[in-house]
Length: 321
Image 1 (cartoon, helix red, strand yellow):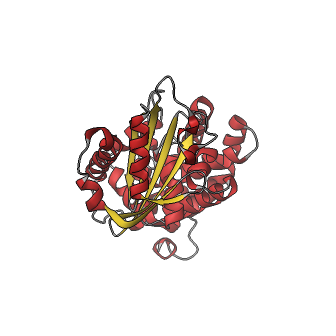
Image 2 (cartoon, rainbow, N blue to C red):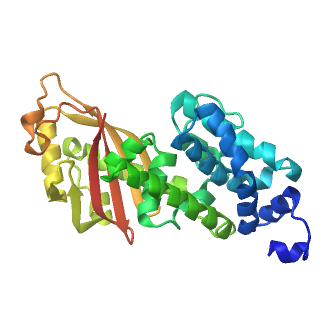
Image 3 (cartoon, rainbow, N blue to C red):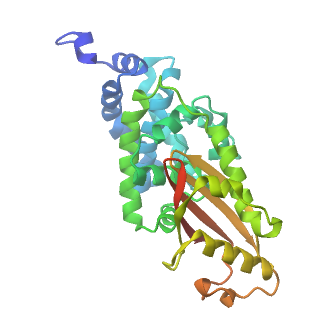
């Protein structure tokens, strides 16, 4: 451990902590972060004002700093480096209200305004390491972390709607996800990491096949291979159905001219997220489907697919605005 390596009574400076953290000592990084948290929080408050967003900016900075600590060439400059990460987090929040994705702080110091979280992660050499750590989280915290850091539906309100939980629960689970990631990232640094890009390609093929199945009349081999026979589909109004009912709805949509345009697929350990736009015909009426009664042409929807041993067991569907 760091304290033993430094020797009894030795003063522990930033340089010592950074060097130890760069060699995988999570305790040293935690000490470094705790030492500079007050200053980081002050930077966030100056930019964002008092409130929970400043805390979010600092907590996100802890994760990005941990994943990029090896790139800090001057260990004595840790304070300025941490403050710069927080400052860039805050500026991004002000510009677009989008959080910095986990593990890609380097792309945002500075980052182009057109940068996209998923694209940044795809470019990062550390992508698979970060996703491996995401897989170490508990299922509830893993889901909110995926939605927050890797999808376009990443506000607390949107995450709460997609998960069917209160906003306060989302905030507490995200805080717990950050805590778990801080411990998991050093632990899995040298482990074998799955190829997330390849997984995402497979999950996108699955999503495209399902959402276009009614008009293409395919046999849906991906569904039969991947979805459990007793998989459940949860609708926004609380209706709980099987997969056959879902395809009946798809067929009814097609009969009335409603189609879907897949916009996003995010695949992680045990969870896949689809997003799709609705393409309505001019004469569409919300009361055409009993389970959508009272819904006035929402523009898009999110599907949250939960898996057990590689097979989808539950899909939660929610509208977005």
